[in-house]
Amino acid sequence: MASSLGAGASPRVPVAGDGIYRKSVGFKVHNQMFHDTRSVSLSLRCWETIRPRTRRQQKILCFSVQKAIQVKVAVNPLKLEDAEEPPINLYKPKEPYNATIVSVEKIVGPKSPGDTYHIVIDHGGNVPYWEGQSYGVIPPGENPKKPGMPHNVRLYSIASTRYGDSFDGRTASLCVRRALYYDPETGKEDPSKKGVCSNFLCDAKPGDEIKLAGPSGKIMLLPENDPNATHIMIATGTGVAPFRAYLRRMFMEDVPGFKFSSLSWLFLGVANQDSLLYDEEFSSYLQSHPDNFRYDLALSREQKNKKGGKMYVQDKIEEYSAEIFKYLDAGAHIYFCGLKGMMPGIQDTLRSVAEQRGEDWDAKLSLLKKNKQWHVEVY
Image 1 (cartoon, helix red, strand yellow):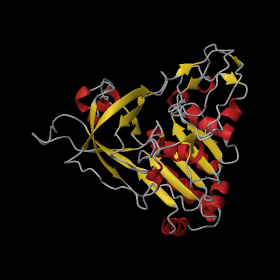
Image 2: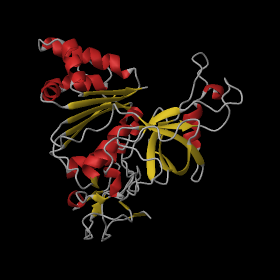
Image 3: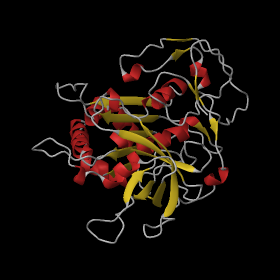
Image 4: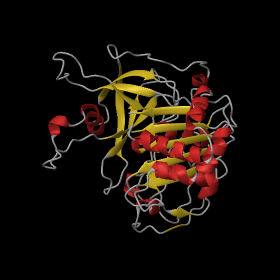
């Protein structure tokens, strides 16, 4: 059970076990088991409990939190580490697994141009997966194009590690944006054309049944054979889901046999600060692992690129292109996840940078793919 601590409280808390970092002002404490079984005693002198001006300021500033968040969470069951190959299609769309909704939480602010939800699903440990895989979800009801048949399966990247947000291997989390359709002429919403599956998930209640297929996918699996490899992650919107899983495995969970010792660099593109996803969680890694994590934002409606236009992830890539190319030449993995419309602009930017460096981008891209450094999942 979570509890919110006010100023002056002196709890004995294992910090960093929060499944998701809430937007509200407060300090969350969860009843989780940590690898370091000593309770971390904090004397929290917090200030500024007034409403912040921006979403990124919605944090209580507390002494000693930096040391506290370095304590990692113990995970179970460790047999989830034993498999040599990822689980693939354990459940097919025609014979899905009946899982249960645990929670549905809106994770964007009021000024976000769309609604995005963090959805926790209880699969009872029966649909295991690896970081970077996807679940198929079959919404209830009849397919209007195929009377008498169920809806087609929709794929969603899993936003949690194999241990789930409860660290016990029984849950998985999805990051879902509600898909709505607005008539371009009238500007009014047309409910008949809304996304069937996304609206089912965003409107779900704890205890509701959900049909799962999968897991599926290998292209976005986190390569763990080299703990010294650099990982560059580029996401737009809900495409950040698999990267949340990567980062929790690297920085939050205490997984025997997996010790990340290199650099993980996340570029996230969204519309504005209210649209940021898991921002407090990612920001905490900057404090706890400053030598191993970098985090750059592209806020298209609030930032300008060097030409005075809107700031997109490709502009950030161009800004840091020298470092990115240096890491790629040294064997870094680069990942892209989000709407497919992100890729043409990114590819054009990378090509332009390569040409400025006197390199053949097509040859370089071919080599990155051959070396399995290039990972793309767009939709």
